[in-house]
Amino acid sequence: MDYYQLGGFEASIHSHPMFSLGEKVYEVLRQQQHPGDEGLGLSLVLGALHPPQIAPISMKDPGIKSAGTSHVLITRDERDAIHRESIKFDNAYKAEFAQQKFKNEKEREEARAAMYRTFLRFPRGRVALGEFESLSPIFLPDMDALSTKLDSLTPAKVSTHDNSRANRAYQDTHVAYVVQRGQFENSRVVYLVLQNQISRNLRELGDTSWRTSLRVFSFCCNIWANDLRSPWDRKTVPKVLDIGWCEAGVPSLEPEEKTQRHLVLKENRQLSNSGKIDPYEYGETELCSLQSATQRLQSVFAKFAQPLPYPTILLVHDVQATISVLQHFGLDMALWKFDLKSLLRPGESSSQPRGRSASPGATNRSGRDSPPPRRYAPMYVVDVQALFVALLREGDTSKSVPSICKRLGLYRPKGWCAGNECWMMVDVFRAMASGKSIDDQLRDWPKPVHSKEGTRRKQKDTAKSKSESESESDYGDSNEE
Image (cartoon, rainbow, N blue to C red; front, top):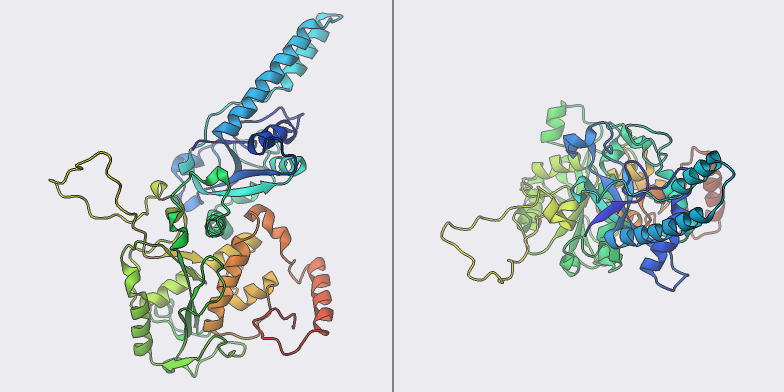
């Protein structure tokens, strides 16, 4: 499917600055998507470009979109509908212009200039989908919403880079949240696929037959925070206090009676982090040695060392720390993938696992033979902490799982427990992935408590909590402080 950029920097379609592009195209797009039905809005596509670390060099040249920015895309059919309407409007205007009488040549030229200013312009062709890390749906309920979105993507002035309100923050390639913008949007697409709610604009982007076979795991660990050994020792032999893992139900991503464990390591049970240790709420905590924990983890993850006929997503907190811990336990992660694009659009990803090449004598007996069943990477790892940082646009990447839950207003846990935090990560992932696009979702979450609005919200929640039951779990929907 071909896509075209609607408005913004280096757009495929734009209008003269004195006119609103949203007003010009909204009704055309609505009629294209919902003929005769005025009550429905628009479902368009938001494309987020590759993060700077993997962006092709050519994308960083002057005049080319900067990595990390996002853009509104429309299909070829929608672009053609806009083009047809533009031609009709142009022809009608030209006919009217031809019948007008002018006092002098200056008046004629002014009218001619005004005529050309009203035309939509189509300076560029389709976009290269390979440049985009994510392609995700956005819903625009009315013309004002479309105009607001396009206005936010309009460059402030002629420039060699995208200085629009929506994208100017992503010119700084050192900002941590730039890297995860595409991953955040791909998480939304995965969730919508699971709910069978993907918009028609995206149906042809890739194979979604995995919807009914996808598995979602969560792994969490707590490492001793006061470890004063060398960075190398802390990385290669981390002081792990406890670990937990669970498997969420699909498609709901709700807790189910599946795999869920919480292990506390005997060797480090005398060590502790700040705050109290909370009891494990989903079963019995097991006290075991490092050797026993290693055997347990290797047994659980043994199948996830080779490509599989079904995909599995693994939710983690702080991917680098998690990798160090899993390597410490001897897990084979050589074929694991750390992006969801390779799941959603495998044909455009160079990280897709390769199968064995055919023998020299092998031939395809029939050109109509079905392709072999798809094999998936053993794991597709999603760093929930990184998604949180990308959403909130806050540079602090040290937030624990409980503090993330508290910041998002999901609930307010008091202590730490890797077994409980596994399910917290599932809740956080579901809450973010089920929401609006990353550019529009931020306003739906509570303000930080240090802001005036956040302080008022906190005071209101505190007052409300006095009338609620004291018996609710720290990991439930309690508003207790």
